[in-house]
Image 1 (cartoon, rainbow, N blue to C red):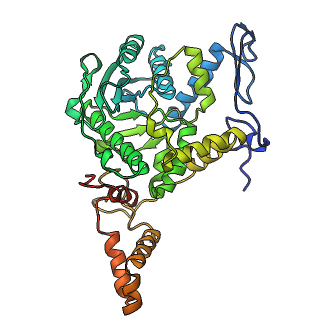
Image 2 (image 1 turned 90 degrees about the vertical axis):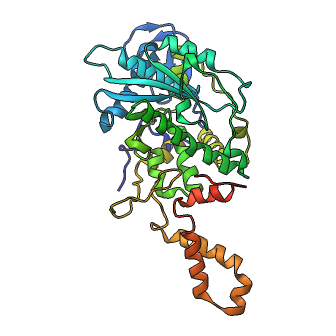
Image 3 (image 1 turned 120 degrees about the vertical axis):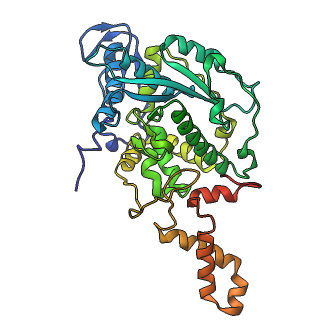
Length: 400
């Protein structure tokens, strides 16, 4: 059934009909008349497929997307305790500004929740670029939000208020992983585990993650490439319920694109301070290559992100039959996938063939081959397929 008008003509208009080479870069016009309210403005914002808008009209448009994402799904109950993640990226500062604005409105329009801000210090060394001064400026600007800081890889009891924070050197398991792909995947899961632990510590029931459509589109393709297809729906959905302690992870900026984020940053005069991670500048990982592929394709085909992202919205998570105690991965907390797909058994069967090739030709023992494949599949019962791949890259020790 044709779905034109339902999805393809969404926020980006008829992008699917544009020819390769069309520009996705909008413009900020210095002065003119707003096409929405009709008032003259010194600065107009011209988004793709939208008329030029003044400062206030653009902010209302962007903030409406934030409120609509939460309101349409009714995912945030009244008076909820929210933990907001701020990593210094443009997306996180936009989310911080939007949430603060939503809580300073009158009673009728106010977003009724209590928010705390968390910054995860992922610096390799305390001597690296220090974000504390910028965080302190944000704390003053967005009072009365409380700002907390914790180091990546630290125990939850080391959580400190921003004014009391001091960094220390920690040993990291990621340095024991051979490939960059495994290291980045492990760090992502480690961050999620730390976030859920901090949320429980601060008695927060919901976590706001600053993910936009571009990053979610890349994450969808990355999850499939890494073997997380069984849980890919939750990786890009508005609501992710895999965190421990009943904590819900929300992505209220999922409908914003890169252009809207950059215009919002300019409109509110925000200064992103996220330091460049050297590992993200390399092409030696599936995550980096997939992200670069999506970004480069988006430059020539502006419907790329919209198509991938909206496809992800239509994917439903595959659940195991209802059991008394659900089996979940000890690292990523997704449902274990060994019983969900015959593909994983086929993968282990192929590996067993590679290992037992000579013996197989000598004894022609097919039953032993299949038995070995099933043993390999169930050898690490606490980890899903993707996390087992990370475990295989570990030079020593264990992930859990």
